[in-house]
Image: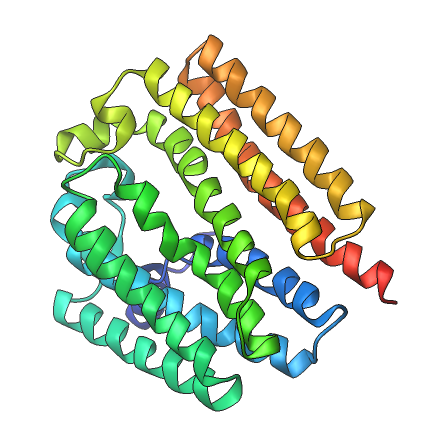
Length: 297
């Protein structure tokens, strides 16, 4: 039996969803809720968690959609991005930009009205940083693009913390640094696979302009700093042994994998590092939340 072709409306809706890069948002939200649990020293209000997640999703989605609008010229050249909605013509660039700005404004209003003003400001600030500093400036001009640009992806931990406490402090700042240093090893490992793609559009992503060996050495350095920061977070945030044990083991495995990549640089090992980086951050933040829920049950 032949499957019915999706309706134009369904295709458009799917296209708008794709503009927000939902898989990236999913990864960002993995860090938000556990951060809220640590800030609360227990389980926050269900409504507060839901509203923070919704507002954060809208803010990140708007930033990602603007990124796709700006990068539509190179997306149509790169093999990895040829299926994106602005390349396939699902909607016009103007419609995409209008959608992006609309959900970003909605994100600010939503977070301000249902969470707090500080979280709303942080959400929009992260969007502006991602669009103007990373997308419009650094991405096409500097090998430090994903290093500095990664600050936008680290913002959800600040939003999660401020949603609970309506303030910031050393604990969320260290956690921000954890995500800031996690981003380059995570992204560079993936970029190794697509280095020719980036080179074809003159985007100086690190693996496309330096050797695989040098890229791997940078990945090791950032992973070691990341590991150290996760250990620093333990006393700063008064975490328990469950978190500390998880941070030691997970960071040790991550570091060992990156050292192996340095010793034997290959796309296959790089993709294993990339896959583990996602597992790593999921388990680390899961252990963080569980640590507090057990200690404050």
